[in-house]
Length: 345
Image (cartoon, rainbow, N blue to C red):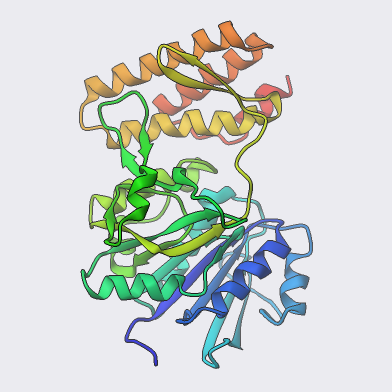
C-alpha cells in the first residue's frame, strides 16, 4: 500500500545508456516505487534516447519553446503494478554534473512531489533502498536522508560519499568512519555526494539550486553544506545504493608533512583544475572566518606547489594549471573553457 509521500527520482546521465537503464530498472523494481522519474540527459551521443525508447522508458520527444530542450512525459507500470510518470529532458549541450543537477532539481521542485530522490546513472538502488529511507523518516521527520553507498560488486562501502565539513582543518571535508556504518540508528553527517540522496522538496526550495557555474566536481559538496545548514541530514545505514563506476585509477600518492598528495596524470589535469578551483570557492562560501579561509588557501597552494616540484613531471604545466585554478577560485572566475586553453597551448 502507498504511503502519503510523493517521490520524484532525479537521474542525471551522460553517455552511459546501459548503466542508465540498469539504474532505472532498479528504481521501478523498488518495494516502494517512486511516483515520478525525471531523467536529465546531458547531451549524450551514445544513443541514450534510442535505448530508452527501445526499453519502454520514454516515447516521442517534443521541443520546449523557451529552452530548446527536448522533452517527453511517459507513463509506465512498475514491478508493483503501480503507475510511474517518466519525465525525460535532453539538454542540447553538456552542462556538466553541476548544470545537470541544477536542471534536475529545478524541474523536480515544480512537480507535484514532496520528496526528491537524487542519483547518478551509474548507481543502482537495492530493492528496499527507498522504502528504508521513508520508514526511517517516519520516526524522526528529517529533511534529508542518505543511503549507504557500496561498490558495484556489493562487497565494500565507498566511504568518500558521506562525511563532515572541516571548517578549521587543512582539508575541506573528512569521510565518515566505516565503523559508523554498523549503527542500527541513523547517523548525522554534514556532507554528501549525489549518490542516493532523499531530499524533502521544501528543503530543496529553501537551499536553492546547485551552482551550475562549477560545471563539474564539488557542486555536490557545496550543495550538501547548504542543505545541512537548513536541516538535519542522516545516513540510514540499511538503505543501500550500489555505485558501479570504479574508483579513480592511475593516481599514485605521496605523503608530505603528514598530508596525502595525489599525483594526477596529465590526462586528468582538466578535472583537477575544476576540483581545485571549486574547492577554493566552497571554502570562501562556507568558512566562518576570513582569516582561517585565507590561511587554508595559502597553505594548500604552497603544499601543491612544493609537491609538484618534488614529485611530478612536467612541473611547469602543472604549476600553471594549479595556480590558475586557485586564482580563479579566489576571484570567482568561472570560465569552464580555461583548462582546455591551458592544456592545448
